[in-house]
Length: 467
Image 1 (tube, rainbow, N blue to C red):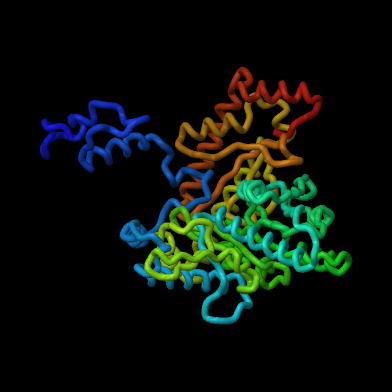
Image 2 (image 1 turned 120 degrees about the vertical axis):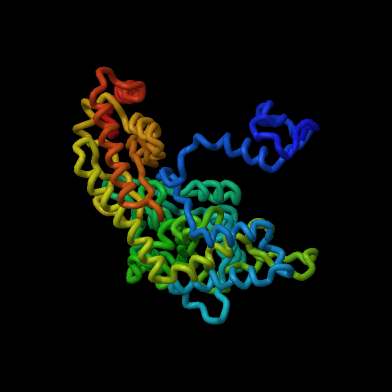
C-alpha cells in the first residue's frame, strides 16, 4: 500500500487500482484486503451466475449454516488427524452412511472407504485397487502381469483415460449406438479376458445422463466366469447417480447387492449437495482394499495412514457432507432429488414438443438429459446447436453443445443438468429463452458459420450427419 493511501481512501482511487491486476509477477507492494477483494471480484463479475450454469454438475448452493461451517473449517487439513481427530471421525461416519445407502454387507463398526478430491480421485482409487488385486492373483498363479486391461463404455468420464495412461492399462472401450445408448453388455463381455482387471459401468453417464445396466452386467460376468474361468469384478462409477438411486429407486440393484460389485465411487460435490471438491469410494469389504494402497507417516505427531493419492486435503467438505446428512436425512435427500428429477422431466417433455428438437432418450434416469436437432428439421435449418448455445449465453445461460463419443461422434447434442436450486420457475424462464432464441435463428436469411462448416463436412464425407 502506497504512503498516500489511508483508511479514508476510496477503493477505486487507491494506488493499486491505478494499475492492472498482476499477470506475470507478484506486485512489489501489497494493498488492503478490501482492494484485493475488489480487484478479484471485479474480474469475475461478468461471468455466468452459478444458478444459470446448467453445464456444471457441481453444487452451487448450500444452506447459510453449511457455508459458515465450511468457511470456519477452511484452514483445517484433514490429514492432521492428531490435531483434528473429530474430523476423521466424521469422515468415517460419512463412509458408514454411504456404505449403508449402497447396501454394503461389511460387518463391523467402520466400513471400508476413502474420500477423494472429487470422484476423479475416487475412481482412480477404485481402479488402482482392482489392478493390484488382479496383479496379486496373477503373481500367485505364476502368470505374467504385463498386459492388464479395463473394459468401459466409450461414454466414459475422462479420468478413466487418465487412469489407464498413468498405470499403463489398456482401455477397451465399447462404442455407443442408436440401439445401445448405454453400455452394450454383450460387446463388453467379448472384450473381457484373463487380463481384464475390472469392468466399469456408469450410473449417471456424464454424456447422456443415463445409467448402464449394472445388474445385467453382473449376471453376464457370472456366466462368463463359469464358461471361461476368468473372475472379473465390477467397479461402479456412480459419480452422479450414487446420490440419486438410493433415494429415488431404492429397489434397483446396481450396488453391493450384486455379487461382482466390489467398489463404488461417487461425487459428494454433485448430487451429494456439497461445494467442490469431494469424492467418495467404498469397497464391499476391507479384503478388497489392497494393503499396498495404505501409506503411513509419523511426522504429523502420530502414525497417520492415508489411502488417497495425496495426503493434504480440505476438511471443510467433509463437514459439509456430514452436515447435509444430518440436515436433510433420507426424507430430505429424497425430496431434493425428486424435485430436481421432476424439473428435468418437465424440461425434457417441453423440449420434445418443439418440432426442431428430438430427445436422445425417451426416459430421464437422472436429473440431467440431452437432446439433438430433429433429423428432418436440420435438413433446412440455417443454424446448429452451437448457435443456440451462443444465443443462450447472451441471456446468461450456460448450456453446452458437444458431440457424442464413438460411434456417434457426428451427433451434436445439448445437455441440461438440473441441480438443487434450479426451480420450476427458472425452468420456465429457460424454456422461454430457448423458444425465443430458436425463433431468432429461424428468421435468419443466411446460414451461420457453424452451419456452413457442417454442410462442408457433410459434403466432404459424403454422408448425412445427425445434427
